[in-house]
Image (cartoon, rainbow over all chains, first blue to last red; front, side, top):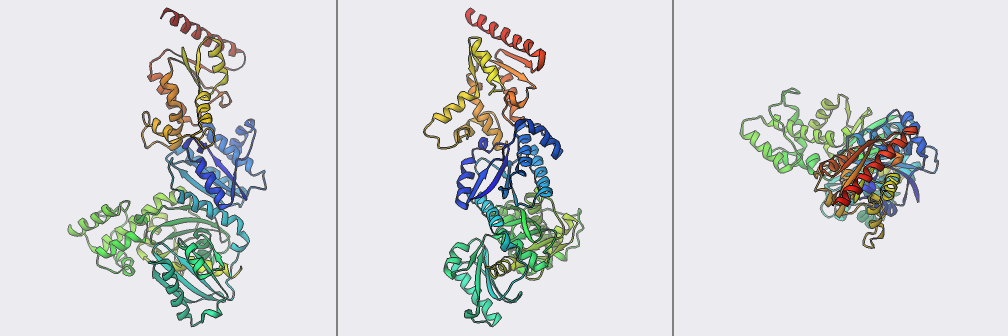
Length: 408
Length: 149
């Protein structure tokens, strides 16, 4: 069991502690509550420089300070209630303080009373990987001949790598995860011109990893957060210092803060088509343009920032597409509509993920949506920093796992 | 009389009420029901779905989960109280619900019930005796009114 400090202001009052305990046990995590004397609460608040109105939040601060005295704690889970402004401030202040004092991985979560189990499971599973596989995740180079498969919710990607180079790739829509993986691997091997028997190892990541890894008898199967961040670091050759990874796929998104090529804080979007490639696919269809050309069409828009004629919001895909159709019918140019669609995806990711954390340049944009130039431009406008889209950015997961499996 | 105390988990206030011949309406009793209920397979303070639903009589569904849980747990106390003592500015060790908003809102709900209420400020040191006397006098007054019917 890996010890993880639960630092919260009272999840038992939200009625979710039983769920946290159950899921932690499933992924091999022991949740512990750092002990401290009540008399130390005031001192801890002074140490961090923030004193909250709520006593439980001050207690939370004290637990965070106390946690640093326990070397057996390998990770931290920071929890406050969703929509609690004071809690959000404290949670973020604690995260920044812990990042200055320690390099243990930290995850943040804003809980509601009925969270989806998968949301908590995926976070704790990623935290466990970051702790238990730290040595493997430090790997900066792929060796030998390996295959990496990213069995995503929307598409399946496979790469063949040889001596730190991508020599073959396959990218197909996910239908039956096993068949899609087989086809993607076959395409990647064909492009590489390498027979299967010459492959040293195969690694799998993504939503369908359990099914696919069993089928292909994978040597390594890991969740996406640690793998995608590693892939982003490898593709952009940013192995040292801080970086931020934005990963937007066909059905979901992630924001990951990295230090020295390893994720140390992350925020996962729910499975919402509105902040993913799915919305852009539907928008592209209505604009009668191939998804691969949507970004270029958006780049033709001459509308200046702040002077947009209309806003598209993709929180509800149905209403979003309805607004798009109305805009086209009222004479708005296609390129302006395409730009608005890109802006709407970037805005939703900003509002739900980025705003809850900070952005540490450089920002590396990966996942299928990173190929849509219009979204990249919107992020650059929004964040005021240059966004790096490395080559093979859509294959970050596959490259990450192909590299990691070469070290197993 | 059933006297609700605030902070709702204050052992000292609870003891004063009992000594004054009244029934203290306190959080510990509510939590003890959760502990003894064989149907609840969760840690003692862990609130249930029923608690959360009960909170909706007082707070909107949009409120943070922890606030709803706290108010849901406190609601039965509020509903059975015939009088109350609100102690303000007490240190957290004297008793509290941990969440400043839940604390403020619960005090507001008590006042809205318009039951006989004593509001007294927490005073440490030498002034502690005056505070206790004020509470005792209030409890005696409640006893007299109860006898009068």
